[in-house]
Image (cartoon, rainbow, N blue to C red; front, side, top):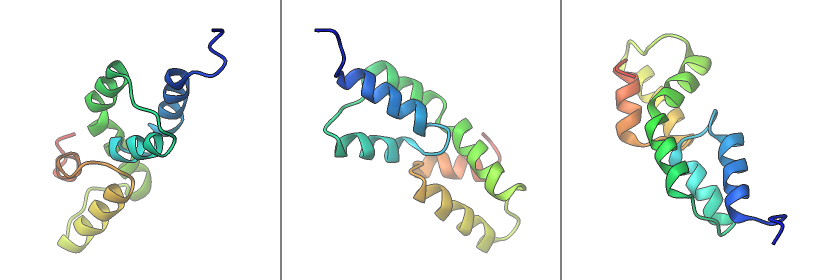
Length: 97
């Protein structure tokens, strides 16, 4: 009644804590482990800024865009491990984000 225990507040808190470092897939997986679903408004916000978040994460880790196929694959594996979708990864690695 007093919202001391609220799945919605937990989801908001987890998204706020993880969104700067992880992608949508990873955040959804963590919430699923706790048996919590994203609200439609939070899910929309995450989808809207996923490319920008992926670009920031890549920039902090690697700096410059990849110049070789091996470096591109390395950066793609890193971003995939962080839970970013394949479409967003290729968009970021092309420099379009």
